[in-house]
Image (tube, rainbow over all chains, first blue to last red; front, side):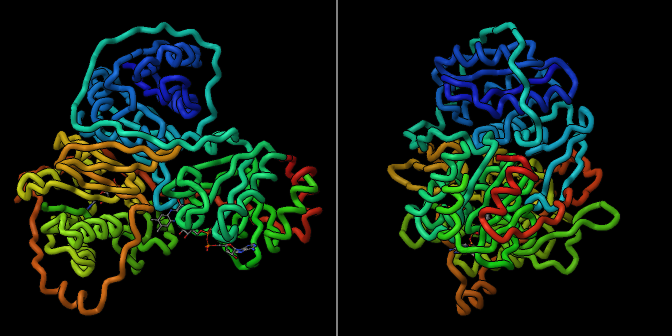
Length: 308
Length: 249
Ligand SMILES: Cc1cc2nc3c(=O)[nH]c(=O)nc-3n(C[C@H](O)[C@H](O)[C@H](O)COP(=O)(O)OP(=O)(O)OC[C@H]3O[C@@H](n4cnc5c(N)ncnc54)[C@H](O)[C@@H]3O)c2cc1C
Ligand SMILES: Nc1ncnc2c1ncn2[C@@H]1O[C@H](COP(=O)(O)O)[C@@H](O)[C@H]1O
């Protein structure tokens, strides 16, 4: 039986997380079909068709799916998913939103946030903020899974799958989209960036994040934050890295004025190289840092900017 | 309006768990347990709605062994009116938890259900969404703002790219994110008062739910340890190491 992967997109472009999710699916064995559900999203299906490993793109173009409302998308995926061995989506806020509904409608469990595929029914996933790794075996006929993108290298785009249009419209009429405020940024997305520089409570205020921005400009880096920095209103919520924010694993992660609470470490400790800049030499962030600099960030950041 | 809030007993968020040496699970013996922080935010939101005169009653439900009555009492001390414990030997899988909660909701008929977005032990982030599907209700997950107006709920959600607002018919399920509110501390008089608030105990059999096994835990292992790093003395040394040793810039 085949594997159904749900593409993540904004009706215009296919999101990076989809590439990692398809990579995970290729390890589950079986043909891969990629569902693009949205409105006026044909361009997305065209990109989707080029993903390596995908044999068919299912395009469900309908106004009911425009905003990926969980109540509507879950009905579509449930109807299509009955004939698949696996239903897989990225563990992003979108995948986390609709996929558990699909699992419940199919009367099966969801295995959340997998980081490794051991067999077609056996997966690894972090629990307790990544302080333990569980190996779980699914006993269900259909395996419903969300994938942690950073654990799988994205697939390439040399394929050419057929696109098959499906006309199934599900409007549950339970919810409606009112609006959204999306952060605009020219920087790379946090979850896909090669370099990330994150600030914590030690930054003092939102304006001081400019110190990180100038360094980020030089390194082509994304800018992240701890929960404390988001709670204090220094920066928007979509910048939070951690157990309950974004999980990142760049080549280089620079933590500035961040103490290194378990919940923050959970989101970044798989980074290849970690740098910590903190004036408290006892800060737990130093236990995971490859290079620690005990100093005042307000002295260090201008100098770092200059010397890069 | 009646509001139902779910609360899970989990390890205290400050504790770093260790894996048992036989790799069967994590070691929770003598570990400090607490109310899941996201459930605490859920209780706070419901209590505020009651204080604002929007809600008339706040019912809390917890599923698990007898010890989870402690967390129900905590929620009662924070201002909830009564509790229901669904007694199980161990913490049920999410789908089973959702099925049990669905039955309680069918009996209680609340107009709003507030849950945590995620339990910080399993890190599943799925029970609320599953429950919503079983009840064919709308959901507002990862809420940072909740408004109840003209028979609907407006929920602002923390999504990857920013904030999204949706409108939900009632009854609805809302799951909390960190920015929804800042929970209060229970006062001593309220802790005393909570001891006398009603707490009913039910079993899965009472609710007519058969718990199915959907997955098996094969093993639990510690994560890969990071090699201990070094301290650098200056910005110059840091830049030099990143260039020539780590080769990441
Ligand atoms: C349910 C739950 C979920 C959570 N999820 C997350 C999550 O996803 N992500 C997350 O990050 N946190 C999360 N947290 C919060 C976490 O527990 C910590 O509270 C948070 O990470 C602390 O942020 P911080 O390191 O910026 O602040 P603090 O712990 O206050 O640390 C600030 C640091 O800055 C240093 N500093 C101050 N001034 C300077 C200076 N001038 N120069 C250099 N250093 C300086 C200090 O020495 C200190 O180490 C969660 C908590 C809970 C309960
Ligand atoms: N055993 C339980 N008892 C009560 N509520 C629960 C239980 N398990 C999960 N929940 C609720 O569902 C939310 C999400 O949990 P989870 O899907 O396991 O991450 C929690 O924050 C609780 O509000």
